[in-house]
Length: 362
Image 1 (cartoon, rainbow, N blue to C red):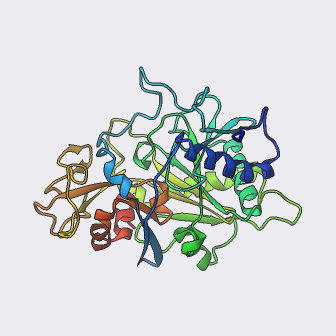
Image 2 (tube, rainbow, N blue to C red; image 1 turned 60 degrees about the horizontal axis):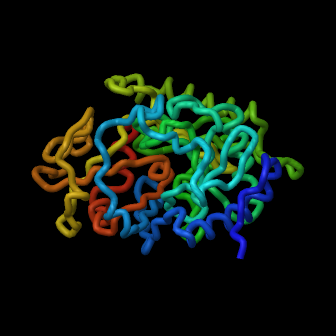
Image 3 (cartoon, rainbow, N blue to C red; image 1 turned 180 degrees about the vertical axis):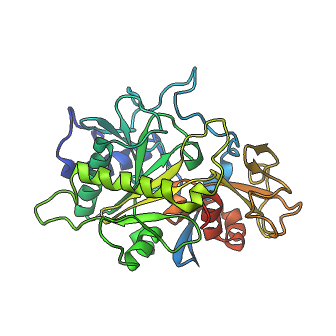
């Protein structure tokens, strides 16, 4: 049987991509060319009005503990290969677009976990362009019309939990079987004003803007210029918010602005980041191993017996082993993927408290 291959040339008809992604992804997993972390169980932990979803992934326990040093996302590290430059390893390439490559995420959390990256190197610390947003929105529309709604997200800056310096956004299926995307469902329940950035009623700054409803003959909700204007408005409102102006700016090194951007066909969300990691004390029932606790400190992250900012004060951390939880856009969207042995600790600490810890409290 001939394996599915990426089409030759530039793809402009995005309606072809959902089926292509499905077949190329399945084949790449079967051949061991990309690796999918299987989730064995899902939990729902409501807090602050959001039904946070926590997925148990046993294979995550095999991963080494994260570095506590913030990455330099302005350039590819000397001596390292830019993983988003061709030629791509077998199984990663999905399609060439006009200004981007569409790739399978080599270490994916779900089926059809995709990466949309710029062809030319642009740093992961810069704002998305008109083309970035338009292409991402067009992909989201194509997948939704195929009955497979997706979330697009951008981890911008070193405190967003981004790890690769070459600018890229990611797409992941919305877990409709578990009630949808938590942050999106919460925003939809509030009936936000169209085209106006609005802080959600949460204990941390999370801005959202409801997109205009597309016309029946339109392939996207808004044109590229308008979509980029919405994005810029969210950034402007974020910069002007009192919670940021009253908080000292991040200290060097790599003190670039950091935030998580979420995009669906209905809303665009932006959550500014004060920190990349949250220190979660391990509950007595949690498994403890060298990969699940840490005793290092770097920047504003201090582990083992010291407070994380002000959020762990009075939480009884003391000398208990602690877990350093790095959180990217998916956590701010309400999705957490964790080692099963850490679920009780996360529930005890509060999933919403993790979001408040890494964001700006209001």
